[in-house]
Image (tube, rainbow, N blue to C red; front, side, top):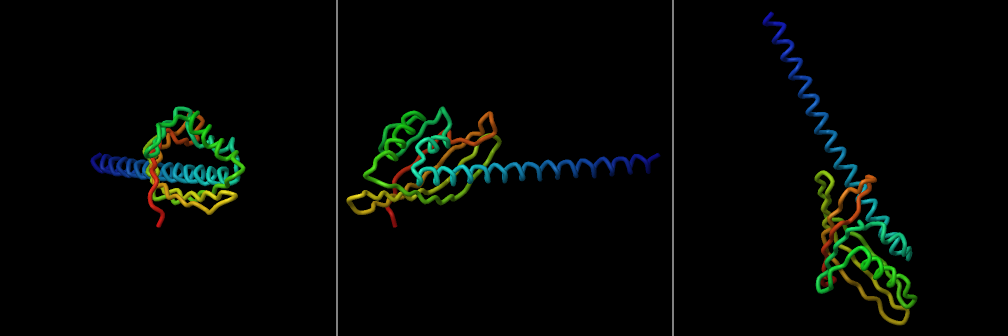
Amino acid sequence: MRMKRARVGAITAGVLALLMSASHASAADSTSAAQNQIRAELEKWTRDFDSGNASGVCSLFAPDLISNFRGEPEDTYNSLCANMQMALADPAKTYHYDLEIKEILVSGDLAVVRLVWTLKVSPKNGSEEIKREPGMDIFRRQPDGSWKIARYMAYEAPYP
């Protein structure tokens, strides 16, 4: 009888260990999947912006967005999208963003992305201006499973 209990106990412990291991692997897979999805969203936004896709550039942001860019008034989804769409509609300039993702941390339905954007502004009648914009984006998983920026902070830094 003792042998049976010991065997059942060992089997139970083994099953629990496997379940915990599977749960840990599942969480790691889930984190990796979220990181990949967020990376893809940022890369898509970069392509949309660079190609002048005014409607596409707003798709990265949550409807309740609050954004801060050093020295500028706080933006909401509506004001940020209006400003980006106005800039993209300006025929006197072209824009190009380069994206450098430093890290993506995921915890449940929130993720924090440290990144650096490098913006090249090329006026039709002038010299190119380059701006380096380090920042931090806070993504929130939306009800449809997509990831959108709900908050972000950025600032302009000297270009090396």
